[in-house]
Image (cartoon, rainbow, N blue to C red; front, side, top):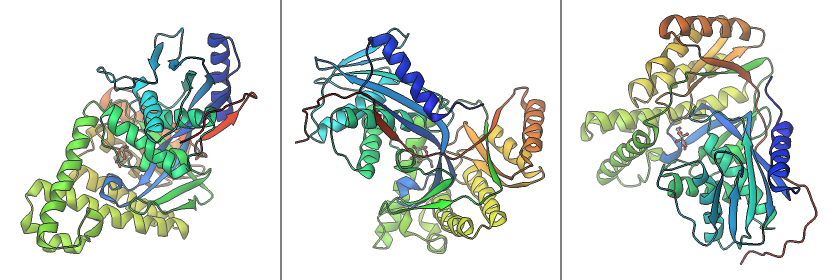
Length: 400
Ligand code: GLA
């Protein structure tokens, strides 16, 4: 059984007590996510429809008298950094997410005191479920709470995204940090990535969400991701030189792109085609979800997967296999890869009561074709990040 959010937080607090010999001042936690639909649209100022999942990272934190951030002492990952000299590590390690967030809070004018931190979580790493956003958000909320800062939620998500750009070197969009920060139990989040206006859309009763992890690590994710981003930007540059009013692919409809297809080289055209059609699918999916029309929603999921496979070229044979196995199972509405791609996870929406059959079919079919066992589970949709104060302490730091 998946441990509850409380139990993840509790384990972070216990480990903190054990290693630092004191009770932390605060414990914060933030979930991983799946994206129901709207892939590679966020950095094109389009729409996304993610949901926070019941896998989370917790950070227990308490103050120190010096200016150091000390993380997970006693583990093989023991690390310590001076707040006055925070920079990305050369080897790119997990601590970059925490130091990145601390650095962004300082850039914003927050005065941070030294902190002891213990990180514990169960969002699988490298599986495309946004373990990095979960870590960033948990660290941000812990530091905000511990230092008595006031940072609005949307701004917190944005500064975590900035940390990922500057400290992890991935020019990600806003989706992962936004949903990890602002997710709601049993709801998907329909987000306009240009205005950042959002709506929580309830998931209808009687539907279950299955996650299937291919176990294929996303080795190329960083470099290929940045390349896709550049290809989209190239499309925008060319299209806007011929027609005004285009600052992002968000401003182009599928029909308009068809009319201008002669301007773009074939690869850039396919990348742009995915994005503009995907935006359209997200808007229609949100409508289908509001109307409780899961058959329509499922069709749009399959279309999204095909577009990611053929036009955006971020799928892989294992993800395609899972989607095919789902499509042939009873009680399935739809399935697709989720997240950046190049491996990682696929998701499947199925009727309640049918998930056992789908999971058996996935386990068996995947093993026959690949010789490996996928990791498959039914997940529930959880709340976004939260911080809890545990002990009374006087905190004098103020934001400038
Ligand atoms: C990663 C990024 C997101 C988004 C997805 C693809 O998860 O962090 O910003 O671009 O890929 O939709």
